[in-house]
Length: 560
Image: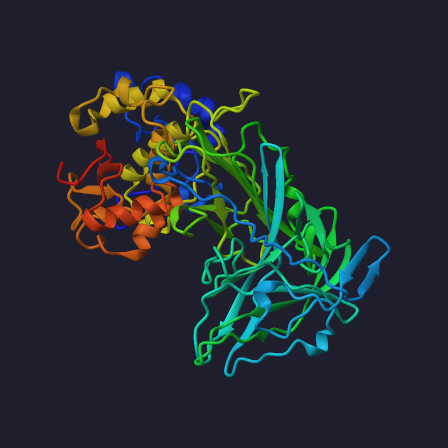
């Protein structure tokens, strides 16, 4: 039942009827009432009877100015000492582990290459570590140079002392240690968050794609440059805390299975349904970073690849996700690799639809740096996911559409059921016209209502011009009046004003739910929401009276 029940619910207009809607709205400038029996809202089903649509995934309006990104990929490679007379332990015809060799950074320990895994023991009282996620690759393919390291989400219980270096991944096969992991005691953050997380409090265990247990030569110096052969392995997380005495100790986890092949490293699991809705496209020319996750087979794969450095080229973020639940939402973060600082965040809905947004020039003052994409919590529902950071207009000319609402589908907020029929009809007309990017009809509707636009500084033609003078304007308008709950006035006077979004009111100014709704809808990014909570909302606002008069569409602080 409507909060102000003044008759049958007109409902919301349906985009499938856009031809009829466009013809009808051609008469708006002549004064046709949109809520009249011949108006556009009368030609469509009621909102309360329509089927809830799946929400389109939005990478939503990332603020380009916030994306100052830096920090080249740190590989953690370290020199090996010359081999001694120790026996070389055969592993495969082309792969030999130097049995008994100890990398210099582990000289304080009993860890050696070729040792039995039974001798891998924890020596730190009160400490424990455990794998908490699947293995993933952090790759770089930068201007002819390729490299790859491994990562894995890890939990730990702290005993005496502290952990100032990240754990490593120790690889074994047939009960023999084949890799002791990279040197993590120089240049690594011991508490860095994993690029593929589980939503728990975790840190990253590090691994190199090149084993430290096979000597090789590079530029006259001995380096670890030999990858482990393809095959099935056991991987353990090993941490090196400083205990109370000031010395280091080892903490060893239980093993987990990992498979290596030409595509990378994989963790086992049950194939997730729904992955067929997403295909991994070829990298776009000029792509800076790309994240891929595939759980559609019984060996899961995840990879974050740096493909180019940031520049003064305007960029876009675009992606697609699919899985068992089309309403599952994945949070994606853009981070500063050198510090782990989160510069911006957004959400993607796993309904199989591709969507994105322009982010502009990412790093005017940090040109030439790298960019990482992190997914801190991947739901078990996700089967396939990719996210790309690439030029706004790729070389093939397939840029973002001139209208940001192209492909938008409403996900009607529950609170809209309380609108009067007149307010609902007007809001529905606004949403559909923005959704179908009908500039002419929006101009006519605004003129018919005498709407104040942008605090009176713009005409309807300026506000609703295409291409958009303010990128994202059409999308934000459509999402605001359909995917967010408004603030309702006290009482039912005809001139009482319903306001979107509700965070402009004192009642909801500090509401976590109301702010989160704006981010989910794509009206604000998470970074914008966090910044505006401190001094008040100053994004887009819409006001419609309870008798359906559209009063304003503006931006800026509510007092303006």
